[in-house]
Image (cartoon, rainbow, N blue to C red; front, top):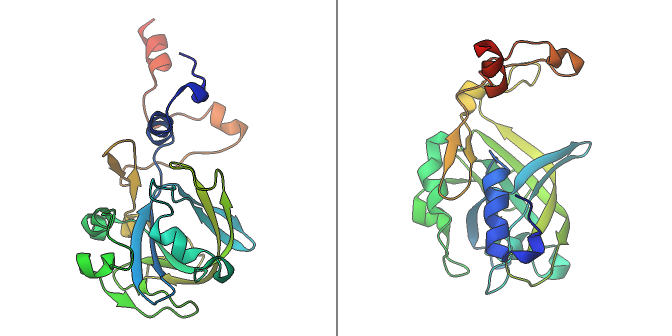
Length: 227
């Protein structure tokens, strides 16, 4: 099957992206409106893209009625926002609350109050962090790239510099390696599906990977064994 994406509706293009680009980490973003109201929302078009400076990106889609609340809030002050946010990662311990924050509330109503998570003061930025979160990245907006301004389903890439990091005690060792068993992140798949990160394996990289034994079965190798 070969597909010209221009022949598909935006919603069908989204289904292909969301179903194939998996698993995706989930950003759980707290932000403040210019009036000081707290917003909390999840975004699975999310990743880390650089370490010098430390940079995260996430992409709220434009909705039929305009920008999502988070996008309005994290826009630079010159564009009517505050230009700040705290990015948490989705983990098992508050998964239900994270999913509930996808609710489309009127602008200014707080998802934080709806789900009962605890706001804690940030150190550098004004939006609060989540006390329950094992990781919190305080960020300032560097740039927002609007791929098709004002068009529903268009992406809006928020490029944010991390200016302070909170890690739960014991989450990282003295070499800054993070304990994945303690973190227990949740990933996004297509449709209503999610995945856990408990089933993991280590593997070599580079050309040595070609001769290294796989920790899982592969169809073509199983066929060779049958012969």
